[in-house]
Length: 222
Image 1: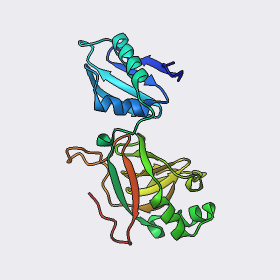
Image 2: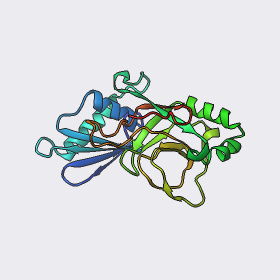
Image 3: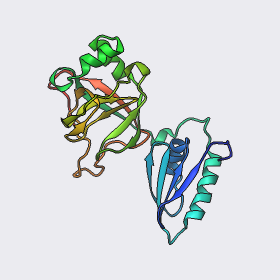
Image 4: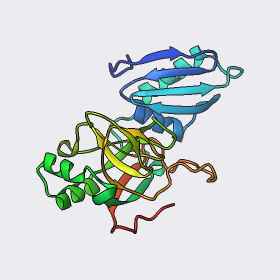
């Protein structure tokens, strides 16, 4: 446990990686971005978990674990987030119709009209929890309870790229055509994985995200 009595676990992954599991993974990540630890080359976030890749010629896992224990104990969990590292991305979305075949079902499930459902979804304060599943896919957290949709009983064999979908407590956008079991409510033309860009993926853990409704044929893209 850390100094606040929160359970913390450390798992060594070979000679150059250490995973730390903690409910405070998000503020720890922000702290490490703001003030990196010497010898740490990359920090990979997951849900309540960070994996740190480090240079074993500069420090070993025991030294890194001690440094992380100290950093966790020093976190100010009552203060504001590191505003200078938090970005906001607006995702333009065409909702319903052929590109959002599950919108009517989701609206009915929530007890809302389609317009009210879209308005509520666009007003939800979403945040990138972590990346995974496929390159560029972000698990977006922050859906209010009424917008949390059960997954399909049988996944679709192919979900078109750009599809905006809801599954359990998560929202997400499919960067490429893949199978998928979430309920599709719209589509964006925003490219979420492009190796020709300096930063191939437009978002990272901790970024704020908002969906913006646009008319059919005007989804925009980057």
